[in-house]
Length: 391
Ligand SMILES: Cc1cc2nc3c(=O)[nH]c(=O)nc-3n(C[C@H](O)[C@H](O)[C@H](O)COP(=O)(O)O)c2cc1C
Image (cartoon, rainbow, N blue to C red; front, side, top):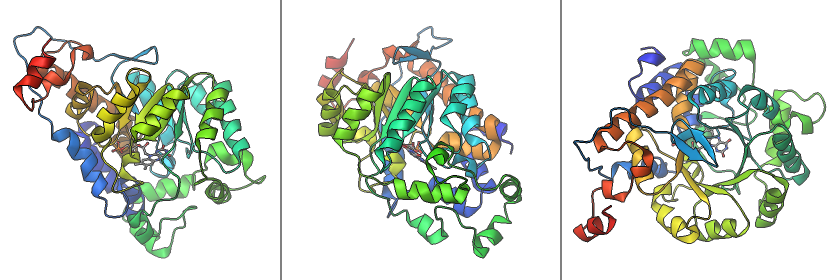
């Protein structure tokens, strides 16, 4: 099966699994501790039933969505994923190009293997930057200035990494930062020659946005070691207040789960939240983002743009979230599976799968635009609810 023959996201996942050595695939796939959160994230959307309405003329449903005053072609974007070039050399810019072609946003990771400046050249209108705070706050401030000078529209500060999580697959596989290829890893990697050839040809990818701050002449491993000493730093509300003042455009916090934090962010002038549990990679007992969404919405009302990521694998999952009031969604693994399996074409194909599924499900639901979605399309708990929601 080639990437363009992949019928759904799970097919892309299988292709990525085939191409990548276990140490790399498990890094993408894994959660933390018992990995209960992974299933919780995916299952939450499937627990809802979409109730269709028929006999409506909606041959070409329109899934365009306005976010921070800009129109995108679909209600989803690409979440930040670090170390992407380890899965496919050049993956960051492939994802950026795929996002630009699909007219959806792409968030460059704070642990990206390409630079902010390159992102601004490749996808100036679609690229956002995600900040991982450094212990030395002058580094974070400099990265914020670089993203602002490059003209990027949106800064996303990830708040859910107060400590390095214990991802047990990585521990068992010997996944370290910097990555060390033990004999066992190399032998297993030989079963994935496509990946191995790329690895030997291109070498270890560099965390490009940190080179400037690492010791002069540092190689990929030395930059990675430097980043390890700088990250996992404490991030406080004082920092958020400073970053907010420094950043002139849309300012988003990623990883907010508690309504108290959402309320406090709104008070500080944060423009948007990405309700997220980091793809179940930080706190295994964390709820699925959709479970906390109603409380967050109640805490901040319309004061902020509310986005979400985690566990979206079908267009129908996205429609369920939109019916419940989420404004925009992001995906991490699905587009990364695509890029790992088939580069730029694979990333584009992942986006295409989602937009096709959204279109077909909108046809089934009898809606012409996403503005028409609401909780009356989800199977009602009691009939009073349905009457209340009736348009
Ligand atoms: C391989 C991988 C790397 C990630 N790296 C980052 C990162 O650098 N910064 C960040 O804020 N989130 C990171 N995330 C989390 C994603 O941004 C996103 O929250 C998560 O993948 C969403 O869940 P999903 O994979 O089920 O779509 C990473 C996720 C994965 C799978």
